[in-house]
Length: 307
Image (tube, rainbow, N blue to C red; front, side, top):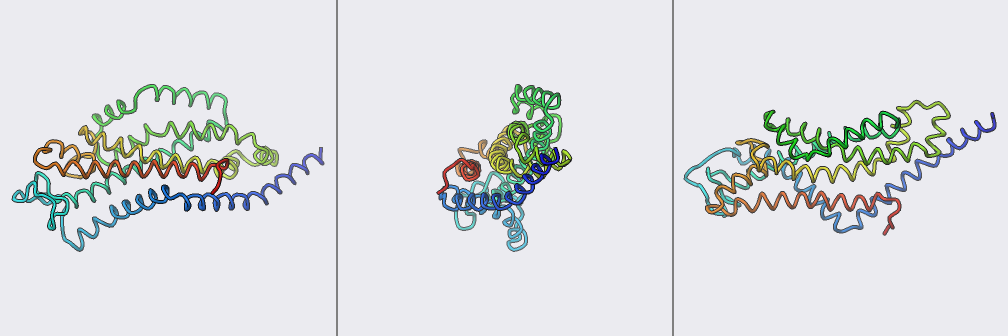
């Protein structure tokens, strides 16, 4: 019996010694794969540039150009794009370019915050369900199946009519209704990982459940979490834009790409250019997220062929 325990402890020590190097080479290989994937790098750089522009753009506009995003000028209504107004003006004479940057800050902030919160909820519940199994797993899966049987857009529409659709409320609503798919993915991974030799060895040595989940299981589902985060952010951009387009998202005068598209639809015949740019930015951002998620999935899959 003592020999068996010593062998188990020795195996665990060997794994602990070998895992950091293996883990390090895995991430180095993934980064090398991403840097050699031209399409993924284009999506990553484009998304970073768009995000940085929306973050620092309003600061520069306010401090250097002394312009206000909601400043109206009726005399300049529906002014065509030109040197003074790069993308023209809207029905109230507001500069379209400035409002697009402010709207991007709001839309991207909602998408990033909601997807991060949804990932935290999904990963936490997925790890608990997969690790403990039994009635905990059965109860959570029943709840997820019930939640997914109702189209999320209907639930969001109902919730948006009950609560004031401010950016903070939208983040909470999108996160509450967006964690189920991540939870399923993480649960499936944990069900397999909890039976691995290194987890069983750590359990035999007396490691508590929280340590097993955080130190031995969570690092091994990190690649799944990263991919899920990018896909979730892209989907939430579309959902937020859809809610704003229906008038249940961010409310005027705060701009977002969705409500700018809604306002532009009303004045389509007078200012066609007002519809084009919000639609292009929404489509381009979602495409960047999906391409990045696809590239990360290939790079972080240990079974994929490395270039």
